[in-house]
Length: 66
Image 1 (cartoon, rainbow, N blue to C red):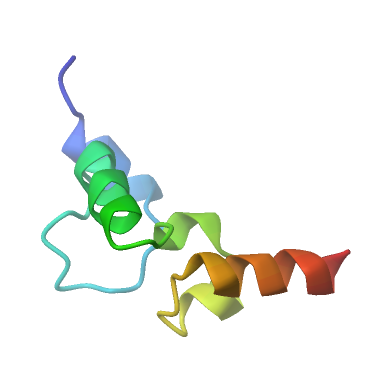
Image 2: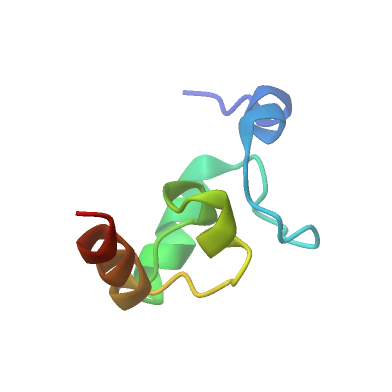
């Protein structure tokens, strides 16, 4: 399967611009899971901008939202 980087970049909500994985979703997901994080696209915009991509930050957001 070939990655469509151009289409992926157009939909990517990550605000970390120097990221070398931007538009390469499989690389992004592999990287973040390896360091116990989730990709920025899984967070709402206000939380994504904090760059705290930890599982714990996501869990706090989910629990607060509920």
